[in-house]
Structure formats: C-alpha cells, structure tokens
Image (cartoon, rainbow, N blue to C red):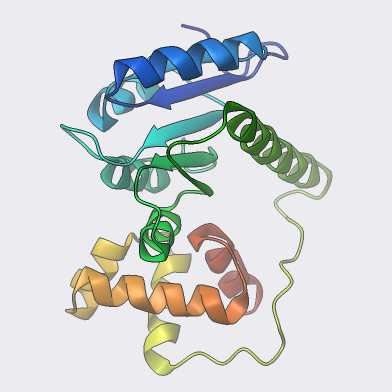
Amino acid sequence: MKDGNAGDQKTLLLIDDDPNLILLVKDYLEFRGYSVITAENGREALDVLNGNSPDMIICDVMMPEMDGYAFVEHVRDNPETEWIPVLFLSAKGQSQDRVKGLNTGADVYMVKPFEPEELVAQVESSLKQASRLIRQQSRGGSTTPTISVPFDVELTPTELKVVQFVARGMANREIAEELQVSQRTIESHVSNMLGKTGLHNRTELARWAIENSKA
C-alpha cells in the first residue's frame, strides 16, 4: 500500500460495505489520478490507518462492525489522524443527518446517489483547503488563518461549557458523560453554536473558541 505522503499523487481511503460502490468509485478516482485504498467498515479502516497516512478519507455512514460515526470519532481522537479531511457518504439526506455527520467530525457530507464529478470536486476542494492550511502553518509556525465569526455571538452558560470541552478535543459522547446529559443534548448544543457562528464543523468551532479565549 502506498503512503499518502510519498510523491505528488494523493492517496484516498475509501470505506463502504457496498462492493459495487467501492468498485465504481475506486475506478473513477484512480482514473482521475488518485491512489485509492479501500476498507469494508470502520474497524477494518482503523487497521488500514495503522500502516498508511491517506490525504483524505471518504467514508460511508451506515456500515456493519463499526459505522462511520464511531470511525470518525476514533480518527478525530487520534493526534496522528485528526488532521485528515473526511467526506461522509450517506443515503440519509435530512438536515438533522447532515448536522450529526458534521458534528461528529466530518468536513463534507454528501448524499447518495451522487454524481461522480461532484464527488471529485468535493475531494479536490477539501485537499486544496488542507494544503492551504499546511502552507500557512509552515510559514507562521502553528498559526492558522483567523476564522471570521460575527462579533455579536453570545453563548449560553451551557454552550460555553460545551465549547470548552470541544476545544479540548473531547467527543460529544465524552462531553455528555462529563455533563451528565444525553449525547443528543450535546449534539443539539453544538448544532446551535454552529448556527450562531456560521462555522461548518467542530474543528472550526474549537479553533474559534481557542482564538477568542472561549476555551
């Protein structure tokens, strides 16, 4: 298997329990110049990550053994993989499904069925964004571009507690246990804060909290 950092060719980890989708997407992405590693579920994908460093992960949500949500939480909890962009693929297209996917740690949420060209466009956009952040960090040490958020954002006391835990890298499940509430309640608080700030995911929310002394 090819390491994603070798050479200019980008390596993608594709995870789905549908062999037909794996075959079609893998062929399409390889035709576009990407190297593609595949796995059938989240548990197998974690084993793959032990020996590989892909540039991006494309992951189905509903899978046996370990679903996409649990897998991405593992990815975000590991300092060696937390930086990898994640694109979720799901047959569920309701707004609450999208919010849950983004709150879990995905950077992009796409609904099946999808056009291959749209998938490639999302992959390229995510890789370019990751590359810009890396270049910025190499120029200015650990600094990254400041996130633009409205000045009048006000958090409730509970939201402030939640965002402090998010900034510490804690998963929604862990925050729920710490505050002795349900995970759904934490997901609702995170969703409300994303709406107030106009941010896209928990990673940006954590950065905003740290940069603005919320954490």
